[in-house]
Image (cartoon, rainbow over the protein chains, first blue to last red):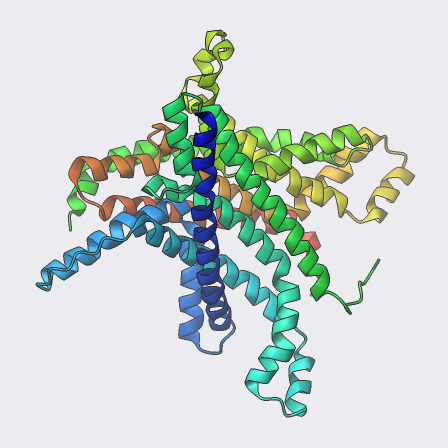
Length: 229
Length: 229
């Protein structure tokens, strides 16, 4: 009886992981775009990127999620209705959660990637130009490998916070591990057991990610001299 | 658009704002002192002390705050022994549970910030203090803590913003802070857009205010760390 509930709760861990990975991919894309905008010479792009990161970091994740799940569709439907259309915008909790988390963590990734790009010595870009490398080749062979090394600590941190933030999507009805834990807690009158189980799941994801990303960090720091040790 | 509903209920937002500020200030105020103590323990010679603080921060930083809150507010009811005890009047009170969860959570993050700051102080400052014949207590009070606090000021500023945003979770256990008020208005008036946008704007203003305060504080206390021009 109890073990059945435990398996249903842990099964929902896949939903949590899928949501986290999907949101991470969106966040990386937005983060790269945001970092390029912040470092561009165009004032409009810089202003837009600054507005984006300020808004995302100035409003709580939960409120942003409610805005994305309830307020934005309501506004769009009002516009569609006013324009005479009969389409009804009604995002699923997964899609709303994916979009919200991706957009929020895109802002954090923007700062991480911006810092990493600034950390690459200019001389290397000039050297690449002098060797006649094209823009794509320069990005792939010179910028990207170093950017990964420089961005990895911030990236790890953002990922850990992102995994924990997925728990909020249970509040708008996504059947993730948190949602199922709540259901099992109410059905069995053993809330402590099931919330602890869900907590253990998040903690093991965090520990495993830390180990994996620390290994990756070593891999990308090969050939970098540690200074001051 | 029905902004008149917001104007009619502006008093509710005022009350919500009061509760949001109360939660933020009480949680930060208490956790500041706890974190100072734990940060010293985190760097202690005694491995038992050091590792037990490390385990505490790992657990509370590795799991979502939502789970910690639910474990305390819903989970503890599972234990008959607690329900019969004199603590139950406290533990069945949502305000007390929310504050307990917030304090335990933000103390874990702040402890790591402070402990990291203590580890990275310039050894010269400590050697100089020893050479002046300071006792360990005087050294801690006059040299270590002030030097650590000024160096970690911007990280601590981020943590206060995180705490402010985390108070929005109090709405999930029936408390009527800014997010709770917004949620209630959406349910009472069947409008989805304006209440959450108003809540978001309030948080944004509070965040920008905190950012400005910490910038002032850095100018006042951490100016000596800036490179001279």
